[in-house]
Length: 590
Image (cartoon, rainbow, N blue to C red):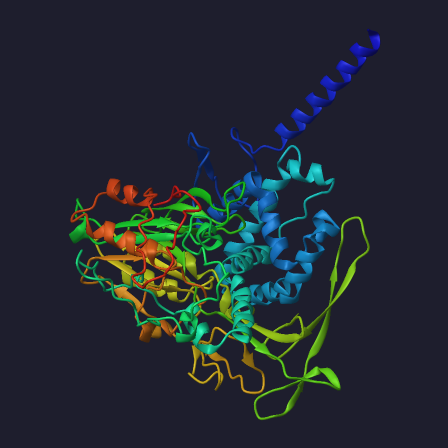
């Protein structure tokens, strides 16, 4: 009995100690905290859901407070974002992350982040420095380190200014890196099937397309695609199968194609004042990324006085690790995003010299020498790993089977990242917001905005490569296939804001996006297509919008929570029925 009592006592002590340790790592919700870096008091008030509102006397003080609350609430998530982008996960979790680091480290994003940081304007650098100080203050003020570090038996490393830029690079991985797989998959298919079958299997358009400027078709009128897709299968594909060969089950309930869930899920739209119930413009923004715990977005409100005494108030969602509201409202405009799925990565197959694999042929027939950088990957509980990175004039080399490619990516250029998105805090009109979006350094997105005067607009936010139309004589400037290093020219810098596609107050009074092809071919070529979603969701959203002559916020919510899948069946005989499955529910930000 004595032994049993002792055992129970030990369990109680251990459980109590564990509970107290976990509780000590929770954020401070009451009281005060002295911070010498502040010029005046910053108040932090949380609502019933724990969403903070920060109010200070200056924007930089509010940035400090933003870092403070994000570190207390989400530091481990922030740590993962910076480490994934930098290829430094093994230092935190050990050898299990080596494969991830070997894949991500060749991009050398930490080094690129430092170069971008050095080139930031003084006001943006100051904002970032104050945010960094707030993060480290918030982390240090916890009574115990976040529980994840107890489980990993390690200490959290301090936040650095370039780490915020790394969090943005992590979004480049999330939003654009799948383009590499797409190009390689298409190249593999092209090697194995005839050109006519390749074109039939991978059409550039479909009857589901729902571009801007095109109203829903009438019930007795078929939808018109952006451009005519291949109308029939190749003749040879119609050849009857020999006896004994089972028929395809592509249209059956158990087809792998039909059962594959879509991973594309963002959607957003705007309705102008003339088509709303109350005469004001309405924005709906449903930004979907992979499911995570916690959610990738961090809800908050920021407030500080302007020089004229007016209180600037920004409400929306931020990215943990960054001091800005990514999507939200400043009271005069509201804005949101969906991924554009443009062409922002080129793979260039290297014609390597058999006598020297580091030499590759470039335009003009000459040989150029690649350089080798040695990246040191620290490994928790193990020896560091040396990773040789072969770098070409276009970017790092990746090897796939017997093929070696140079990877050119917008994310590698300095235009990829800046803090210009902060200027949306002061934007008062659609036109001003669109210009800010076009000059922002973020993964290029569909940007939709509504203002307090009932106006609406759309453009692409983020860098757009300037292609001269002759990137590769055989593949074309926006090819879905790899280019040849001996003929590749690629993009030459980036488009100026006045060359971006945009829509302001369209005649239809509505704009909609759902990761689909939004533009007619002439404009769509500016960004290209690297995996845009079939327009089934976009056309359904468009049709729902036009079914409501005067929309209210309740109508917008009804469209956001619509879980139907009204895909039309292709009219050609023997075609398959496509199904779309919503991967996530609507977000809380509208």
